[in-house]
Amino acid sequence: MIVLNGGSSSGKSGIARCLQAVLPEAWLAIGVDTLIDVMPPRLQLGAEGIGFADDGEVTVGAEFRLLEDAWMEGVAAMVRAGARVIVDDVFLGGIESRQRWEKVLQGFEVLWVGVRCDAEVAAGRELARGDRVAGMAAVQAELVHRGMSYDVEVDTTRTEAVECARAIAKRITGAEDR
Image (tube, rainbow, N blue to C red):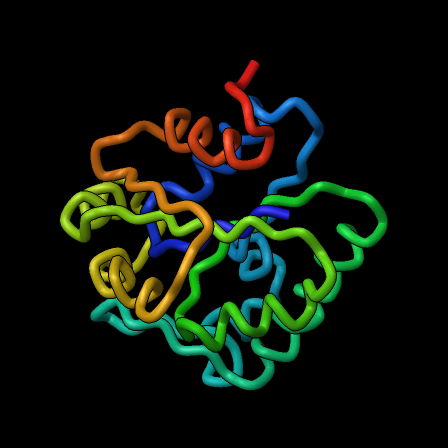
């Protein structure tokens, strides 16, 4: 299991796709964006779900947490069943977010990866994407890494996703990619 943690528009999804290409075994890539996309619309905008403020701040409510917990358990069940999984997440709660993952992943071999990106660069990517609330990338760039420790850290500010994926893959395989 590989867990990628980084702010919005830091390049996590691109790294996950590149990891699927450079790792010799088949890996599933699952992102928190997918969880949000499959939630009912009322939870994508309501106080009990996930909220996006005009300044880029993200809030989560009790119903979102309930579904997120179930999603995390489901990811762990796939790993338990033998799947290799790359999770792309945004640890808005810092250490508490990681501890929630650690709880469901107890007993699994997990590589914790910090995906960093300069706030200004991430904000530019966010603007180019056009599918994010302006300001999320800047707000999250450092917030998600506070107090965090990782097995590997990559910085996508000036490094392409494939190079970051190769650095991560070296920790998994102990060798260069194919």
